[in-house]
Length: 180
Image (tube, rainbow, N blue to C red; front, side, top):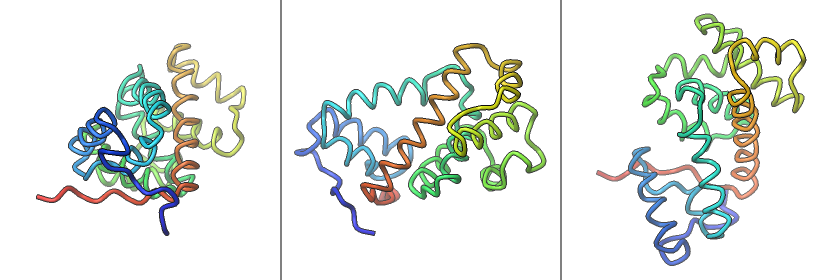
């Protein structure tokens, strides 16, 4: 698959964009992420998106482990290899074992999830398939999440669905591991 927009370097991204991309690569153990290097070519939009995305991940109210489980499920459901690879690396930092990462692909019916984790995965599936939640799922989530958590969950799923579309459409290549 050939990238439709080549990842930019320092000249295309500017100092801020390039610095952010390099720092992100240090966190994930990769070269500067191609997602940042492509989106960074539209500097103003990139900065706005980065601020929003950062409020969801790593910011926000949901625990990091739960966010990573949701993101990995979205990556699986959308078939987005870029998101899958990127968040497999981040999952380790969120104390998600490789076996749990594999179980995310099986879904909420896989044994071993807590009640809350299963519910978050079920909600992710519903949002992916129907772009909505049933009243029963909403009521079950309400027992675990406050208003802020509910808003955050819906935005998290929708955001990573959007990113999967952007990544696929722009044919953003997978990130390379950092050279040692």
